[in-house]
Length: 411
Image (cartoon, rainbow, N blue to C red):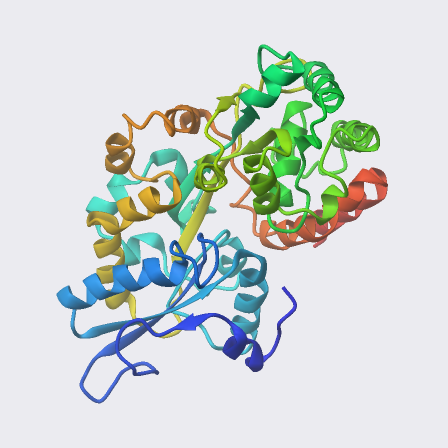
């Protein structure tokens, strides 16, 4: 996430999916929409790459809307936040952005309201709790794109080898199970990714297990609360005992999930998007269970939803609305769920997946899920700081969590 300046834009994985024009409009009257999207796949050359997915979507859209071009730039998750920030700083606004957060753009007045770029039938189909999370001070700007929930995956073969008959429900049971797995020769009893790809998710799951979180019930930031500090001290004990991924602060979730797929890890937290990685690695005999907490399984899990949003700088409101309507009412939203094992954010999409046995535990968890504090304008900056630094809390939780808390409450 270090590329900056105009040169960074040329280094990103850019793909012009329809037409060859650039700028606001072409001589033939076509309008060009510029879209930036995160890559849910395994990179530009992979069969499931974001480039290939969006090319299929845009080709289909172009047939129905020949006067609208869409240029899609796909960027990997580790780099997209920084590169988009650079675009905004340089005044090179996209028309559409699909990524993990929207709140930072709202405070700067850069986005259309959701009801300006979504038709009423699309708005009414969005799952209410998800749509609500897209609001800042009562007005919706963030548009739910896809969602996931989190659960505990465990390798049934490794459990049997270690003599473990049931998935853990408490931290004590998790630690005892990890010790058995280690004695049975398992390389990493518990997979713990606290690298910058998604450290904010893994940390929050553990905070929630100890009655903590990023905010309290009154909406106050409590990142350096005693419960959260205690949580990282517990994790430090697990790491020091050799019961987790070594050097968790340098490990990203996809790498840990790949190790789980390879039989190197006994347990790991994750969402349905991990299932294709497990299957690609040849792992089929795994179970899914609620995530353990200090005294029992979590009564709520983390619900993560990614966002799509429309920038107002280029004045392409009507063209954006046509593209969004096409995406949500046609086959595109369903295709992305099918391709990446991610969950829909519409009532109609959820109904279509109700019979999918692999996704059912996650679909069941969504109604009671807890979300990141998206509606707080500070979340964008806080989220970035968590990704970059929270792994260090294993060694000094008071200092690291205190620094994040200070940033969250500044100004």
